[in-house]
Image 1 (cartoon, helix red, strand yellow):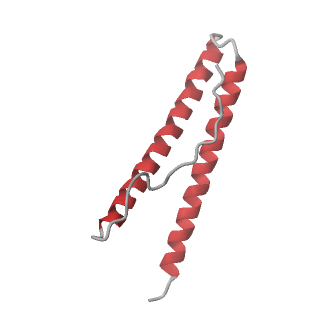
Image 2 (cartoon, helix red, strand yellow; image 1 turned 30 degrees about the horizontal axis):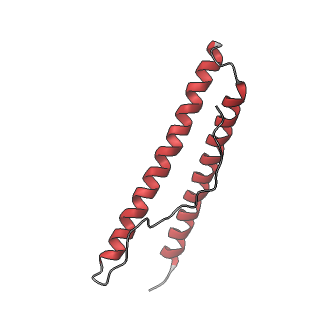
Image 3 (tube, rainbow, N blue to C red; image 1 turned 120 degrees about the vertical axis):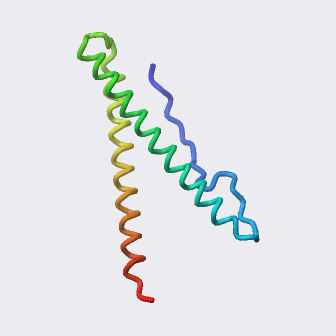
Amino acid sequence: MIEKIAYKPLTLAGNATISSNGAGAAEVANSFGSFLNNAIEDLNAQQNTVDRLNQQFVKGQLSDVHQLTIASEKASIGLQLAVQMRNKVVEAYQEVMRIQV
């Protein structure tokens, strides 16, 4: 079955609120960390789905090749997004390291 593609805006900080006692930054950092972990787990799940569909296709058990094509493209786009995000983070880190104090 083909999944419906819907626009779902992501909330980076979730429901973490910034408080005046300094715990706000820690909450945002934890929320960002969990966001990244969830994104990587979703990417891994997509890759596993493509692997499973590939095995079914090779064995002749997959009747709709479109499922494989769609899942493969979704996983490919997700991987490209992850690589670009990593590149931007590395670039930002290098920029911070170039700042002279």
